[in-house]
Amino acid sequence: MDVDQQRRVARNEVRFRELNEMMKEAVDGIRGADDDRSFEILCECALEDCMEMVEVLPGQYEAVRATPTRFIVMAQHIQPEVERVVEEHGKYWVVEKNGVGADVARQRS
Ligand SMILES: [Zn+2]
Image 1 (cartoon, rainbow, N blue to C red):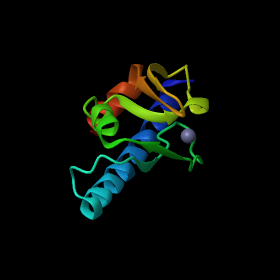
Image 2 (cartoon, rainbow, N blue to C red):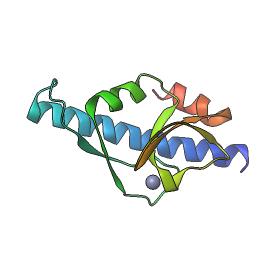
Image 3 (cartoon, protein in one colour):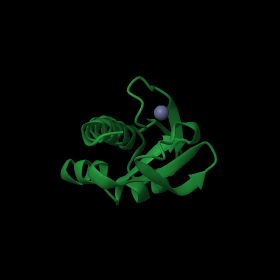
Image 4 (cartoon, rainbow, N blue to C red):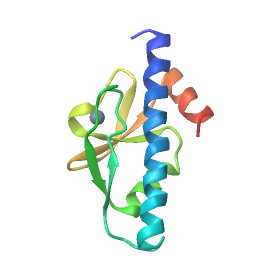
């Protein structure tokens, strides 16, 4: 994967992160910010047409968001070329972007 592709992939993931931030706000608005039940977000993987939903707990979600280069993706959607796995939670895994992808993720956080 060349640098331009890596940038494009990272921008795609950032877009999904932004959508998920909106979902989280909506869920907080309905349930209240201290509700600890799981909710669904979009898989934040690099596949442009992926619309899979992933169930996460609010605390786990917030923990990933605390690091701008980390994303929540389905286990089968890992792209080892541009990211490394930092946590495994059954159906979804947490990945950390590397190289130019990490730069893009940081700038857009
Ligand atoms: Zn995906």
